Amino acid sequence: IFSIFAANIKNMDRLLIEDLKIWKDKSDRKPLILRGARQVGKTWLLKDFGEKCFKDICYVNFEQKDMLGKIFEGTLSPQRIIEQLSVFHGKKIQPQETLLIFDEVQELPRALTSLKYFAEEAPEYAICCAGSLLGVALHEGTSFPVGKVDFLDLYPLSFREFLMANDEQMLVDYIMSGNRDLKVFEEKLIDYLKKYFIIGGMPAAILKWLDTHDFFEVDDVQKQILSAYTNDFSKHAPRQLVEKIRYVWDSIPSQLAKENKKFIFGLVREGARAREYEDSLLWLSDAGEIIRTYNVSKPDVPLKAYAELKNFKVFLMDVGLLRSLSDVSPKIILEGSRIFEEFKGALTEQFVCQELQLFKRLQTNYYWTSSSRAEVDFLVSDGMDVYPMECKAGFTMNAKSLKSYKEKYSPKLCLRTCLLPYERNEDAKMLNIPLYMLFVLPSELANI
Image 1 (cartoon, helix red, strand yellow):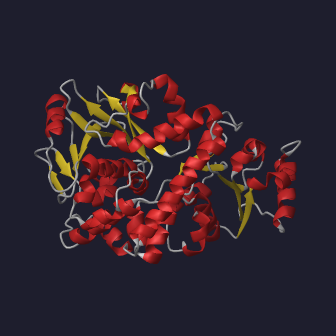
Image 2 (tube, one colour):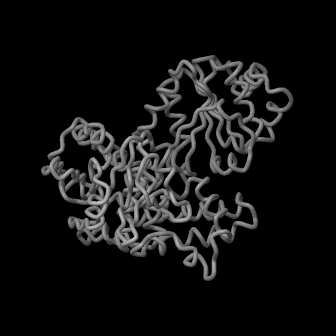
Image 3 (cartoon, rainbow, N blue to C red):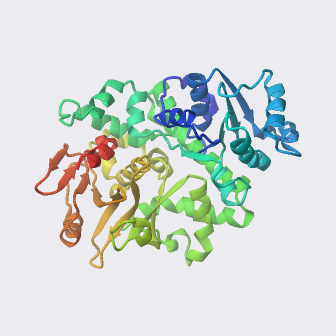
């Protein structure tokens, strides 16, 4: 699906390209593996990076492994591989000037193994690898040298990137430069946020929207993406897991529709047990198609040390796909703020969860519950402090659980996100960031 729209994607800037530029200029640069779910735009981003930052690109797709496999047979000498890839490419691959893109690299494990030799013997060559279900392949033991590669993760377009794709770069720059009084732009930003809840961040869905401005055509694209994902279950998952993966996948909307969104195995299938389905959840997580957040009974650093691995929530990787999988009609965007409140605010919590994934220097995949059934939706940590975050749909903010947390733990700052305007109350140690401004959270925490 993604390739259908590739010719029209030139104006879709991805913020991760800045991280790729940093990688390019590192003195100790290693081959890079770009991880991410199918159809989030990995191949396009690497080609865009190559066009902007290198004189030449040598693109190698290992789905043609019958032809390319022979290059990686025998010794994995970087010079021999470069010589033969140059012949394949039709011109000489130059150190520092040519970007080598290894696509669908999981299809040829020896190509992954060769990265060790490039890191040790030929670091002057810039190599970026991508592949669908690469996380699954690596988890299953595909050989690659630990410590000899760098990693970056690509997600669906964030809300900030969605604004940029809609020609709102000046508005994004205005917010990023520190402006917080957005009353003039509030209506516009909420309207974009409603659209994002419908469209989500999958490149093909956004491109269809930019081309047609038809939500139902966008929904058709999303249904195709979801169908491609379910086809992957049959093609790539171990046979004994396929049916269980489908049951888990199909249960996610009903899991998130509950007041308490904790994942319940009994909702997957009557009588289901954790030990039967844990491998299915792991497969979906390795494929990049779900996000798990874990309950923390003691909110202290490091959060990972206090995570209760048996108590967790499961989100999809994209709010638009969750809406489509849940069969929420695009028409709902016409009904005021109902889109934010749909099935107990599940779309809102999904949106916040996926936005938090982008903050690489923050720990975010955690939430807190108490014995009295109070629950704070997310915990955010910078490695020194833990900040509770409550997210709500619409303009109302009933934060009883946040108040309970505050009384018990006295955090340096409490976080709220909804549609209410930005407000920072130092006396109350409370920061309210509108949902449409959530991308400024790292800079806000840096200024505490």
